[in-house]
Image (cartoon, rainbow over all chains, first blue to last red; front, top):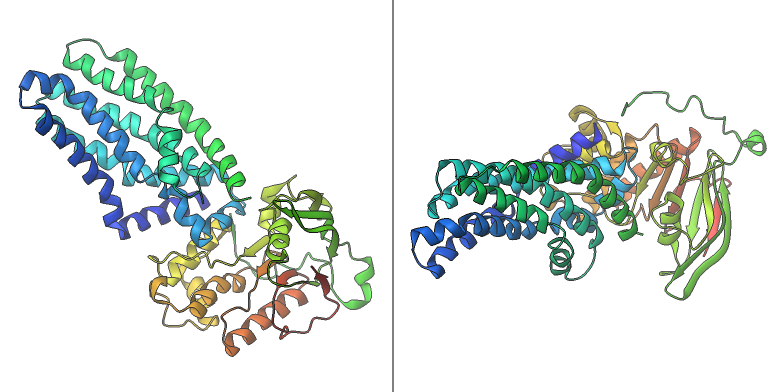
Length: 220
Length: 229
């Protein structure tokens, strides 16, 4: 109940601060659109680079909104109230991450097909790109939450967060982009896909605990 | 999650002065020590508060009042010593302790983009007590905010924001321990009277209130436990 209320509250906040919510998606679109301008318009070349570029842009865009996951609540004192809630903190963290993903990762996944068209990817590859983003971006939010919790109240949290989290999420990038490339090349992507799923399950189980422990330390 | 209900204090021990001696102390701290860097803020601090007792923390700015309150609720770990609730260390069963606790810190814990009512409802939900819009409006009206329930917290004054945060107390009948950091700050005379009434009722019903305040308290302190840092 408490976790559900936190989830709805965060969604409502995301909806009231639309500029912040859309910033990550716009950043994603701009970064992914810059590459064709810089690399030239050779269709084969772009088709080869497309999956990787879109995935890297999604990774960077999702890091953009991550520092604010707990920072706002820490500043106004809500985070203390969450630490003192009768509901276990990992559940509340999971609710916050879920709301954050809906307002960032889901938007990125939905914007991705348009970008994929720029790179001339074909139908199956575009479908696979969206699927891998739907599986991969929740992992980015979950692992990012650990970094956000560790850097609550730290000056320059955004840079520190990226340094902490980006190395940890490289497997997601490798398997995500790999699955799309495999499909684009006419190969089977089952292996990449299963590994992405396994990473998501592990992150969904472990990250809330780690983030909750980090929050207790950060607010001490 | 529990619903608000009347008569939540019925199971508490009676709090008349005569039998105070036999009542078990429920909030107790033993041999606490607080450090900031190498500086020791306080050490060997022990205290206990029984049902119906007010715990008042006094001290100059920077003497560690807020640190002590944060230790009592478990937000800050003491450098040494333990805090216990009903005879058990608070870290032993955190969720049960949190069910008995309301903590209001310096910050009002309000979101600028949410209305007064939404803020109060989400704070109550985080505190583990469901509260519908009518109950929230009732508490806000009692806090002197009738007609402002739908205003975003952004446009409220400092005193009004404080009132929204304190409106939680009007709905916090089940929580036996209230820990309040400077609750009278930024309040006008009417709100001070309202808050003093709430605290008095809570103490009368066998609750415990721990607070810091620089002003003389506008309520009967009775046999308050005073901790001077």
